[in-house]
Length: 63
Image 1 (cartoon, one colour):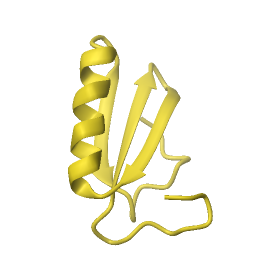
Image 2: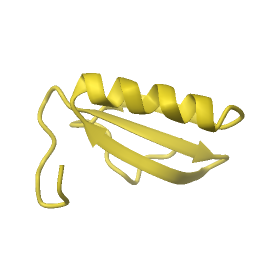
Image 3: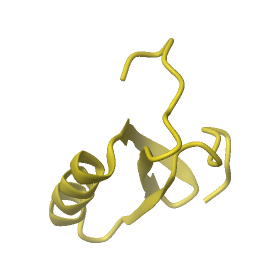
């Protein structure tokens, strides 16, 4: 997805948090988002990883 595209109603937003700081943000279809989430959980074991609906989760949300 490019910066000018709006997320589809089915899209998911995966974010990686270092405390209250967002360090990664990824929006994609549910299957790709699940794959990315699994990879981030393996890579950043001690960090919080969220997977939320993209349409209702603006970037400025707090953790």
